[in-house]
Length: 211
Image (tube, rainbow, N blue to C red):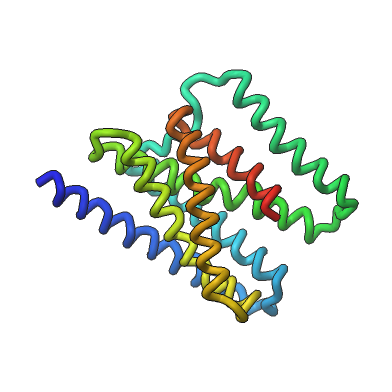
């Protein structure tokens, strides 16, 4: 009975993740009907799609009374410092590089704010809580979420193929490896803090350095 519940939960989560990626791509492709697809507009389309899906995901889970464990139960100096670090890095990166064009600012917002919020409320929020309800140890949840997060990055293959059609297989392998490494770090923080606000901030910081 316990194993059947685990299999059923994993199956439903995998279907959910696949549907989210399909909806993301559908929104993006609908935008490309009106605008020419370039590397920059590809980022814009993905950002818009993630924003729409994030809003929709939050509305649906809230309506069902599902907790995403976004904010900490108690705010402390750690969260204030982490927030200031992210904001400081965003601003200082623009100043140091001397690139404050609207395109660069938009991409920074996309990679360091929109993407982390979108992915973290799904993985370290919703999925983490779903798996925590069936696993006896939270460390098992940590491992499972990390693996799912790594596999999730396969869903970005269409966008990556547009930008770098050559050597796509190698790039996708690296995406999975990097996703797994990110997942370990972010999962460890989620395990410690019991919320995904901290992982959203850390994810944003990591994406700044990963640009």
